[in-house]
Every structure is written in C-alpha cells, then in structure tokens.
Image (cartoon, rainbow, N blue to C red; front, side, top):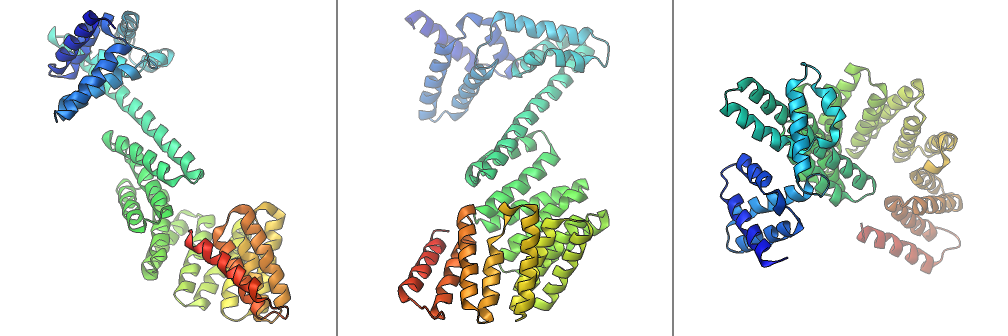
Length: 431
C-alpha cells in the first residue's frame, strides 16, 4: 500500500471518528467508495489497537464495529457503487409499491436484505424528513426497524441452533457460549419466547457442568417469563428441571414441590405421556426420601398410564423403577420379574437402547437371594453394555458390584476383587 493511500485511509478514519451518529458514518462510507478495501480495514484495526492502548475505549470500539461492518456486509466484500444503487432502487420500489406488497418485493430481493440496506434506509429517511416527506420517512424508519429485528432474530436463532448442536455433541461449554450470545440478542429485540427458551437451555447446560445453583437461577428466570406470557405448556420443562436440580442437591421437599406443579399442569392439558414421566420423577424423589412404598405407588400409576397410551419406552422405565424399589423393600423375586419384563419390552422396541441398570438391578436381586454366580453374569453384562454406550455411572456400579460379588463367591480371588474396585474408583475420580 502506497503512502498516499495510507494517508487517505487515516484521513477517512479521522472523519469517521468525528461523526456524531450512524447516519453520518454511513454518509462518509458512501462518499468514499474508492477507499473501501482490505487495507482500510487493516489500518482501522491497527488504529483501534493504538486507541485501546491509550485507554480510549469508546473510539477503539467504534472503529472495531465499523471494520466489522465493512468485513461483514455482502459476504465479506465491501460497499461499492453498484450495491448502493441496488439498495436505493429497492427502497424506491418499496416506497412506490401498493400497500401489502412490501413482503413480496423483499422476498424477491432477499440477497439485498442486510445491514447495508437498513443503514441506507435510515439515511434516506433522514433526507425525506428534511424535505418534509414525513409519511415516506416514517415508513422507512419503521421498515428498517422491523428488518433489523428480523436480522437480529435470525442471528439469535443461528446461535441457538449452534448451541443445540454443541449440546448434542456433549460440548456443554460451547453450547453455553452460543446460548449466551443468543440470549443477549433475544433480550435486545424484546423476544420473550426466545429469551425464555434460551434461559432454560442455559440451565440445562449449567446442570450438565455441575453448576447447579447457576442452573436453578436460569430455570427460575425462564419460569418467570413463561408465567408472565401465559406459556403454560412449556412451563412444565422449567418445573421439571427445577425439580431435578433440587433433587441433585438433596433438597427433596423442594423437588417434590416443583414436580407436583408440573404434574398438575400436565393433568390439566391432558398430557398423559408427560404425566407418566412426572409420576416417575416423584417416585424417584420419594424413594430418595426413604418412602419406598409411596414411590412404588407412583411407579405403578406411571406404568398403567404408559400401557394405556402404548408408550413402551416409558413403560419399560416404570418397570425398571418398580424393580429398584422392590429390591429396596426386600422383594427380590418380584424385583427380578419387573427387571425381566422391562428387558423384554426394550428388546422389542430397540435392542441398542438396553439400559445397563437393568442388569445391575438383576445382579443385586440375585445376589440378595444368594445366587452369586448368576449375579456375576448379570454384572458382567451390565459392564459390557455400559462400556459400549459410554455410560460411566453404570460402568462404575457394575465394577463395584462385581468386586463385592466376588468376595462371597466360592471362586474368590483377592486380586480380581481389588482390580474391580480400583477400576470403579478410577471412574468415580474422573467424573
């Protein structure tokens, strides 16, 4: 880059920094088409860095934003005369068209709908105001605001979608970052629905990262918005998540409080599948509270509803839970029947989704009946499945159970017992 162009770039940067508003900045850009290139952006970034070092953060940020706008507009190209003319032609078409045809015109020219068009609309509306054409000026102001909100919502939706992809790939930190970006935009444009959904997702990601109190705060914020907007059906996800969070903190009474609210809404709206899930959640919580008989009743109700609506997956889950609580109550043979029934259901619907906890449960029941060899076979099956699907919790349980089972086994081997317990401990340490 020659010295003359460098000086011209520096002069333009000084003029941009002296602008009092976005319209003036836009006008300077339009008036200096010949200077808009990659070298200008590079010079802007260098000047911005110098300003940052001088602690002049306002000017530094302004230059960074202008540079970002120049790089972002029109797919990493720059303003040029044809684009400006295309913007002006489109705006004139919008001003001249019959009322109601604006959407069709914008759809046909979707490639021009970007921040450059919006800024040009603002500039033209100011000029129309100056010559007294207030109706046209107001039309462009309202339209530019609407388009800006739509573009921002599109950006927020993109970050939300990216967050879902990262979450499904178990990259919870990146999911959190995407949802925080989406949340900021939804809040800026006043999109309450998007804000509420983002807050709930942020809570889920925080929960996965074991930041339980932060998760609770996000869930509560989301719940408050859903209550304000009357979004009753989607409110239940927040209530269920709050129940799970408080349960993980051993605050079971609070967990029950939220699960009960969720259950009531599901009953009210006729969501039988959701009702069955809530009954399982309540059963789990009462079992943790040391009330297994009450838990058993909730599981029984869940299994009946699941059978009624032919939801085999929830039915299998309810039978696993019934097996667990019967084992807890010392009803080992009944527990075995429940586990076997759940296993048959899962094998019919999807063999790949077999829950290793079924075999851990079967092993526990057989062990309690003194059938150690059968128990060991069950634990080994649980270990195999858990490792295949990456279920660390059940893998650790299976290893611990195998260690305990071998202690009472007639073919007792101390080295094998120690090995199983060491592996289980190592998984627990790395969780």
